[in-house]
Length: 207
Length: 148
Image 1 (spheres, rainbow over the protein chains, first blue to last red):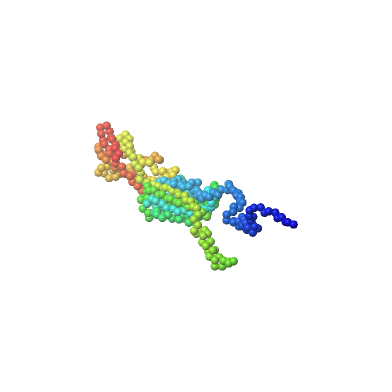
Image 2 (cartoon, rainbow over the protein chains, first blue to last red; image 1 turned 45 degrees about the vertical axis):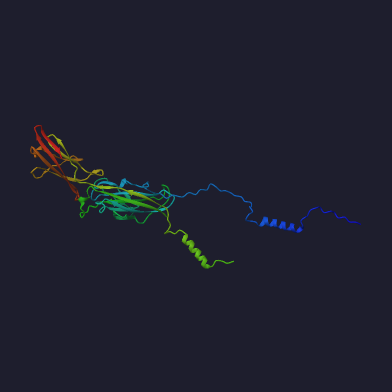
């Protein structure tokens, strides 16, 4: 009896060993090559959120600066007369701050004699008849001296807190009074026809 | 696995504390507002002007205003001519202004007349004087006054 074996087709076939090696290599290559394989990913963009910086804004009598504070100006001032007017400090920004102030004056003849009072939370009286004697009434006096000609003096040493809020915060009234004393010791006649220019700088600092 | 020791944690805390803003070093916002004004003082010495009225000269000056009223300045006037001593002259008060009338009788045919007005602010030591010279000339057509 003859036995027939089917003819193997021509050509070499890979043995089982190499196949296993290939399969393992492919699997490992596809799984362990994290550094080069691109996983699935997805992105979600959130837009529309805007952050804007706040503001800090000090207003004095509703102005940024008062180069000519008219209510405090005075002409033909005579010895014994005094002038008083109120500055309203207001915070028109959402940032709370405190306020300090310095003061100085020019006018060589009047600077050494003109006395200045600064009163927080005070009001000013009005007197238009000679001799005009206006004054700050009420409140807490924080300065009562001559304004220096050089380095400004701290006229608001205990800064009041001005609360935030546009037009409805907690404004602080600062009354300023200037008096030309009728002092016999001073050569009064030398004070005639002179000019005195006080300057105050209010600084609001974020609190 | 090693865990950081207590010393490392303390050091890290110090670093964080140093980088955190503190009240003394924080540079917050600030804003400044500059306020300035001006006061001028009174000049008691009058500002004189003169006019010829007929055969006389009238020296006048405005009363200084303080606020809504006039300052209480009292004025005296003197008149002198060349070679003569000063003589007090009456001051006329019309409210807003004052004046002194200089009659031609104080002048010789051609002479200078010196008028001085002194103001004193009531209740103070403030005084001030202003002189003015009038040149009065007697001509055929009458007197002529020139203020210098």
